[in-house]
Amino acid sequence: MQHGQSAAAGRAARPTRTGCLPAVFLLGLLLASPAPAQPQAPDPATLEAARSLVQDVIGPPFMAQFWLQFRGGYLRNRIGGERAGSPEVARVFDTEVLPLFRAREPDLLAGMAVAYAGVFSLEDIQAMHTFFQSPTGQRVLERETQLNQAIGAMVGTWTRQVTDETLPQVRAAFARIGVPM
Image (cartoon, rainbow, N blue to C red; front, top):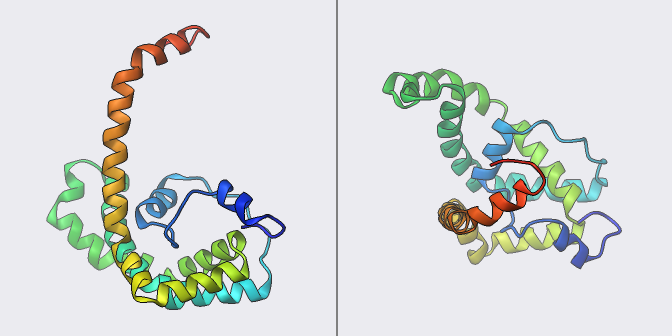
């Protein structure tokens, strides 16, 4: 939540999340999105709390899943085709390419802390820290990738179904403004 925003306004302005950036979405952002505008620097106390949250609580389970997702996404986006799945490409990636990225993991975690501190208040971050250290919070972190995959599959199915059912209306709507589909 931005400073000066009510809690309700902050919730309305961002998607619902389980407490850390899902690896799948972060990977997509890293590989496909332009660099975002630089946010204002968060206050030091909030940034320090966010660093602790990311480094001590969210970071370890998040990064374990992140690197698993990163490999597949990177190879699909940078190598592509059948070559991306070859054992030789996987070996080179694992032994020569991935270490280059893993060496910069501290920068990624630092950036995550800045993002958390820019979005959440100090009180929010402290509450997340407490929650994610609880048994339930640990299960959320451990199962987040599984949950995201299940939600992603459901959204894909829903999107195809709704697209199929509404395509005539969608085409007609765009045709009225001269945009063929």
